[in-house]
Image (tube, rainbow, N blue to C red; front, top):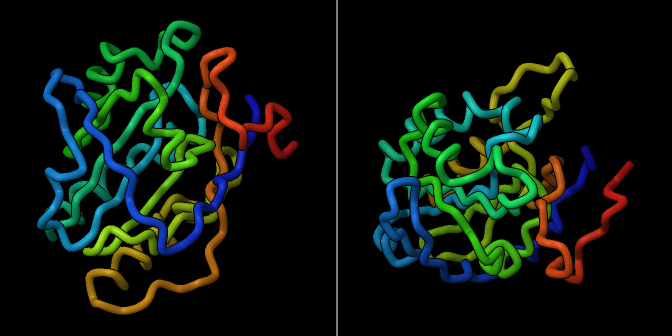
Length: 197
């Protein structure tokens, strides 16, 4: 397991477009969320211990904020040839197991992950109504085996600020997770196979 940190895409970046299939084969695109007051894009997968650690909170986040109109989408960009636990079929099982209410999409070409400069799972990108990036950081301070409870505090604070029309705190700590499993030869220029130790 290689620990990797978010690239911390510059705040103010515009949300890159996407059109990807969900676990039922229905294509979901950025434009589907055009009326949402905020959009949260989470790069995630099934097998990563960091995602498993926060999966129940991801389900709660989806339920809590979709009910308030927030667009919420999970995207799995991993190489499923080498990591079959992340296959679309396994994604269907994961949705049922976790109770995810948000679309869980499969980025087969990995091009969407590269457009977002996503680096790890989980990697969070929160955009405001104008689809400008206002938060890209950790869910909270908890990590696997840290003994710190998973609360979603940092991300929830950012979501609350956006919904209240308030600025999101500028001090943001990067998300930490497993590196995205890039296809051999297709790694982006920002990929560091050494991770962060």
